[in-house]
Length: 328
Ligand SMILES: [Zn+2]
Image (cartoon, rainbow, N blue to C red):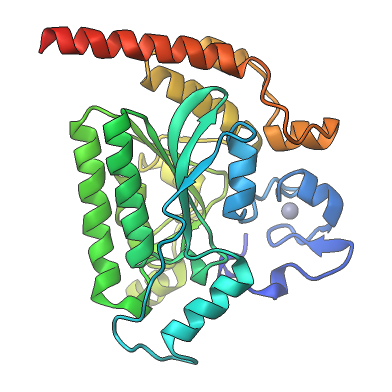
C-alpha cells in the first residue's frame, strides 16, 4: 500500500473526473458509480478511501436523526499567518469550496435508535486539521453529552494540528483531552473511530483517549508520518507500520471494523454503553440508511423499528437516573 496515498487526499489528483477511478492501493480501475455505492471502498482490495463528513453521517446515523450543533463557529487568523495566502483568506476560500465552516461536524444523532453525540472530521477542510474551532466543537460536544448523559462517538480523519494557528491549535489537544476526562468522570462512554488518515495532534489527543478505539481497515494512524520516522531513525520500518492491523496487533487499538459493518457495531456498543440490549440493536435493520435509501428511494423514511427501541431506551435510562437519584 502506498504511503503516498493519504498525502494526496484533498487534491483532485486522486479522484480524476469521468466514469473510472484508480485505486490508491491496488491500482485497479474502479467504476465510479459502483465505488460511490460501496461508500468509497475498493471492490478489488477492500481499501477504504477517505469519506466526507456529511456522507459519513448519512451512512452512520438514522435518517433525519442528526441534529447539528455549533455549525456557526468560525476560526480567525490569530497570528497574521501567511503561506501561499493569508490564513483568513484561505479559511474563506476553503469554506466556499467545501460548504463547511471548519474541519469537524458535531451534533446529536441516533444510530439504530441509540442516541449519541456525534463528531465527524472532514479531511477536505484543510486536511482535517485541528484548530480553535475543531477543539472548541469537540469540547462543547463532550460537555453537552455529559449533561445529557449520552455516549460520544468521534470519527477522526486528520493531518494533525493546524499550523496556521500555532500554539492555539496545540492548546486544543489539552482542551479536548480535558473535556473527555470530564466526560469520563461523569460516567459517560466515549468511542473513537480512527479513519484513514489519522495523524499528528489529533492522534496525540482526543482520538486516542476514548474508552474504546476502533479503526477502519488499512487506515494510516500515527503521529509523525512513516517517511519522517524512517529518515530520522535511519532504519527500515516494519511491514504494515502505522496501519490499523499493525496497531491492533500492538494493542494500540481495540478492534478493526469495516465501513459496511460500522453502523451495526456502533449500535451494539452504544447499547452496551447505555444498558440497552446489544443483541436486539444488532439484529434490527442492518442495512445502512444511505444504502437503504439508494435501494428503495425512501430518502425520508425512518429506520425500521427505531422508535420502539428508542422509547424502550429512554424508559430504561429514566429508570437508571431515578435509581441513581435515590442512591444520592
Ligand atoms: Zn484496491
